[in-house]
Length: 378
Image (tube, rainbow, N blue to C red; front, top):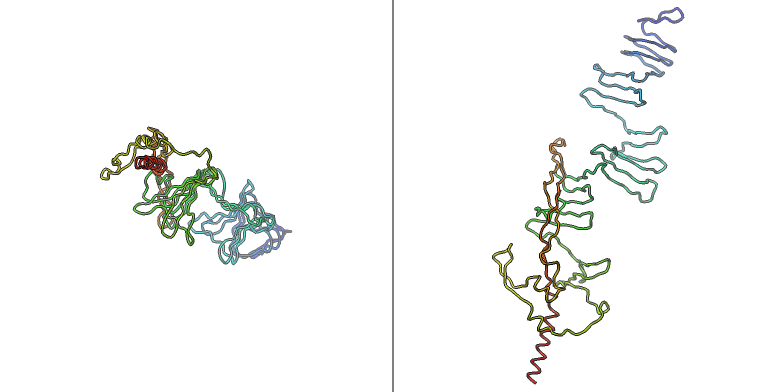
């Protein structure tokens, strides 16, 4: 193809100045373009150089490679694309690679130690990864980079758990309802008798389950003293304290907490109303022990018993077990993670007994008996 300008014909290795071409133009030799070249069609070049701009209309592509695998273009809806359509990788090589906004502010850059993601100079939010309505969307956000101690947030959009893994093995997760699970994907490792795991639930409760070993270890280093404190409505009502050789289980008993203090009377008759028995627990048929039936002891010393006779409560249980995500050696997901399906059922709400609460009555009965003995001896 030849092009005439001012009556002349450009031959091989031409030089163009301010040329507009409509249609297809093929260069089979060197071309020097020293000013703007506007093309509405297809340009094929093998050799040549330019010191001016190539202007491509919307949806017109710059194609690279024998198979036109690499495409660079601007769409009609005002989007820009670099598209590798072949089977190879898209490699961008640079000593330092930066992504900047229209004002020249770097938003992401490679560094000697990895990747740096920053906000603008104004100290606004920083988002890493998309946060849309699509399932699986992940967002990492810094509330304000200009703050002295900015808050970083990691979140998912539609309630998926956030899992932490070593290799292909999940070690911990945060569930959609805010529970932190370690070593398990079960929200109730105690209730479901799992082999091992910790659940710190968003309602403030915690569960620890372990097979064949101590599930909870608590240590006080150094001096003797309080190890655990129990509060009710932010007021201390009991504690566990330790020394180098013993443990004390304490309940609040200071005289300043009490009023209407009177001596106990009729204690012998009350002791006679107790019904101590020998029995075995259903779960431990081979072990016979001494004790009380809770509701019977509660008729004599109500404060020694918790719960109500024949009570029923609702219990959450696992209907379908959770499935852990599994990945192959190439980090491809071979089994999708599925959260456990939980249900509610009615179960017996068993009574309990604190036999130490019987001690005041036994002491008072003994004192009454001693007084009678001393009277008879006198």
